[in-house]
Image (tube, rainbow, N blue to C red; front, side, top):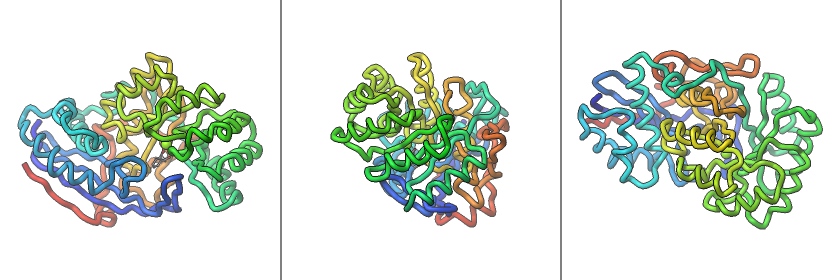
Length: 369
Ligand code: OSB
Ligand code: MG
């Protein structure tokens, strides 16, 4: 196919309630979309970058800049030789910026698959038509508030609870949730790098709660530290921020730093690299699950297709649209019996709703070949 133009859309999508992690508290999902126009049709993708470089080094206006200045000019130059599969090799010379790369590659994969009537799920080799949904629960102002939210998510049918933790909000909230909801609740925690190598004894205290996993306890660059921690505690160590490629995933597994892997397509540069990480992990016997970046329907749809691959044996953060949004940008994804249905239509299988995009868009910029 040939890339004719890309529209970069910045949207501010209000969240139902503040989402607090160890690195930020947000009331608004400030995000960028890539809307690709090709000679075979159009495609859509949501960039995972936050408004600030707080989860990773990327941020939304930085992603727009690198797309505009470096990525799109190279992809325009490919003319008719462009395929979704050629995006990563073409942009390989550009260091980092994986979320920007993921956005453009995914929008082109969407266009390409729509043009051949193929769904993301079948392209990726998905084997499930619905996936169990977990929910990521932010840090709260009080334990009472936390209990209200966890109660409500379990009432809605979520199959797994992930508690965000940080120093000062760890042992007590985890203990309360475990004691209140019992030993059968699938429960895990995510620190988003908030701890250090000096905190291993504190983290070991969580062993008594039989957690599914602890996600990214320490610095993302400290792979050896994670391997040491994995030896020291019983709770399986799961990596999120550290795993930026299939090569890194292979190393983390071999070093014993990743006993479980959170695959987030945006973080690793897209769905093709995600598939590679899935394959590396399955070959090594490492369970994977699908993480998220609070995606609206455009990003959520593609994540659900990935989560339907056979190696995704743990519930992901692929929750319903209503977890975050009063009004999603697409037809909402709904929770049924704790599961979300995997889209089967061409490409990502959902379309943006124009009036809603108009309502949330704060800027729209066309970049043409
Ligand atoms: O670490 O998984 C994370 C949200 C933003 C940035 C990082 C993370 C998260 C979440 C929520 O935990 C995932 C989601 O529901 O999309
Ligand atoms: Mg995480």
